[in-house]
Length: 216
Image (cartoon, rainbow, N blue to C red; front, side, top):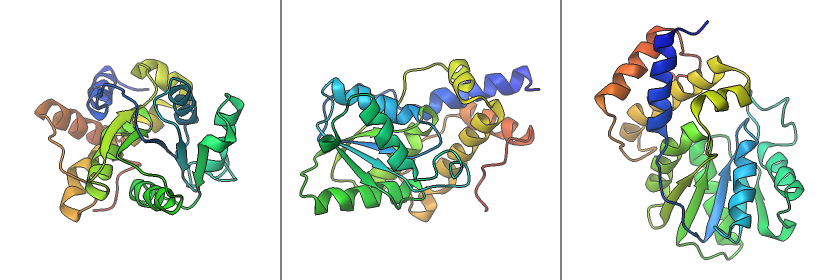
């Protein structure tokens, strides 16, 4: 049972993690692999709206996705996009990334090898991974403009679509921890964390939502 305070704190993190960027056409869309096929749905929708002429799906498997996506996250994303009407010629697949840094580095390498000129990236992730993905891309690919995107959905509806509030809150807490500690390790650029967000994070940790914290 999730307390009212934890629900309120989770909504604070949910809003913070989203960049609230205004969408605009970019050189390429990059869909970051995860357990959430909604990333592929969003990528397909944005492609059909003319926001990018090419999609890269990136991701291997993880303990979270091994059973759900045994052929690799990027492969399952590609299949979903094709089902939704995206032509196969508009999709590239990167199969080896196992973390957000890999997603960016390996997608960049794939595009360079394919001879695709990139000045801007439409970076598509789960809603609560927007800020971390943005900060990682700014660190690893500073020469391009980054526009963050995700499914347009409110927190409660997103939890319902995933089917596990604990998983979502654990993930959001883990993402915020990395925003706090990874700049010092050179993994992403610094992002200011408002006081109310930091306090919500601390309360959620104390409430036991620590399953996705990185070792420190």
